[in-house]
Length: 543
Ligand SMILES: [Zn+2]
Image (tube, rainbow, N blue to C red; front, side):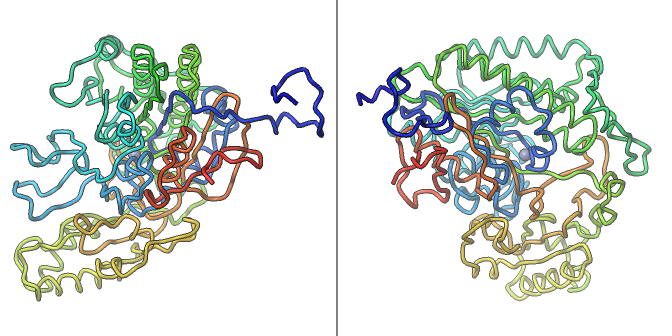
């Protein structure tokens, strides 16, 4: 045999089925990693039958419906920090979207995950975007270190998504700041961004009529009253007034603009057409804003996901037209959960909103009164980390900790309270992430220099929004699998697809992609492992 695969020569051995055909062996020239913010495994399962474009293409590849953001703090910044580093938040250092540094020199002790708090005059709301809190390199950064000709490009609807997936050595990094696509100070604005900002500004200047409801969304079109103000969710169709930037951001229009910018950068920079493999990360953030504003089970999420499916399809067609051999990995930074008002209508009678008495301020006042202290003794929020006032004496600190553990543990909405000492004494979790205990999930989010003095896990089905309002009715961030479990999809032209329903992790994405470009990471260099994307007995991973 001369080995010419696919030739007219009759095979000598048993004929191979199409599914056994050789997989692509050469490294892809462009890696495209897409994070769909708040795209839970539950949403993927619900909408799989209705996808016909971009998602449908990815479903022909390697499908891992049970990917895990394995940690406890299932928020945007930690989640994005795992995807391209291959590391859990315990190693990336991104323990939450915001944490407290009570010894910080500035008045605002809250630290935003993607800020540089050393910039004078900044605070956690008005910050300078920075990569300094991310403690480990991304795949793009490693590729660039190995060969500086690699281009690293990151585009997202949120700054923290762009920064945590791009890393510290980016050629282009752009995020939507609420008004326009922007980057670090002093960066030259390339023509693709100038064009994108002009196009989006023109688009927002005009109003948008409500989207038409396809039959699958009509079935979900039911008003759900929320709170006492008489407002409802569940029947929205993304009608938008001219100039309404907030409505733009929480609509399918936002993801379309991010994908259009990413496509324009691919074209202008000729990504994938250089001497070495390039990498592009895309943060599609609108699904998260839609989830927070309207929950996951109404007409709004239905329209959002079907629109995103179409926009992804269009994005892939632009990539196809370049002729570049590219590989796509799509996942999410965390899952999500519907609003309790609708969950109660849909057979989960125990779904509830968190008791305002669980807030740090309310509980802190009680602890201070019990112990005869003045001032606020604890900072933070449930679910998640709490920090104890560092100006207290050791004796007072221990008394506050004991009282906080007692009061939180006794609350009927609390599943568990773990002290820093308990988490530190817990070994790093191993094995399938769905079987990890709650303290193991907390351990995976724990980074000693930033983590709190204790952590509170709320019970399943408790939504950590006590007082819902427009834009804020549902959330994620819990220890539970509806917030941890996300799809992981890999696709490349010519690849033979398969589905693996068992659990894998988002930290596996970076080593998997690294192996495809013959750039294996040293064993133990990252927390994740290489997933074999070759459907046959051969493997895409190193031996
Ligand atoms: Zn998110």
